[in-house]
Length: 100
Image 1 (cartoon, rainbow, N blue to C red):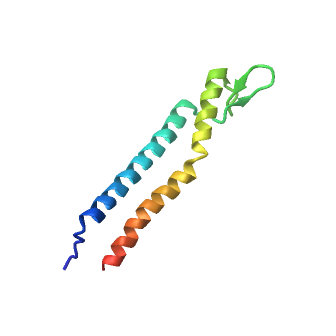
Image 2: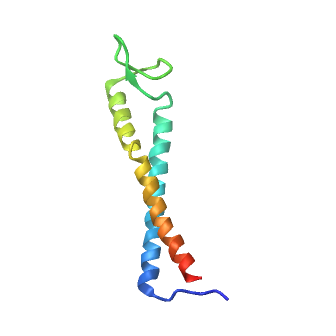
Image 3: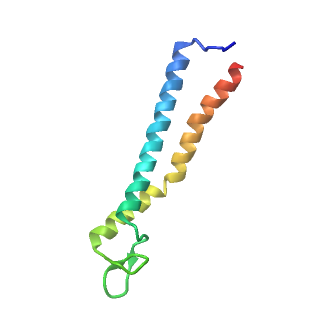
């Protein structure tokens, strides 16, 4: 016999948490994929005498270095996204376990 939780407010909250977890996960995946496609030779760093270069020595412009730096700063927040998803999913798991 399956138990169904009938509190509409709890169902809305659970649905909102699930949607928020998917949004966060999708954004994280999108930022990660952007970095892989745009900066395949990351990290981009200052080179001696000729601007910026990637790990394999390819030259990059100032604007590419700036874009990489912004992406790298966003990726530093990656663990916060993982924790947020875990908390959002964890609340759902705890609620599910309490129903049985």
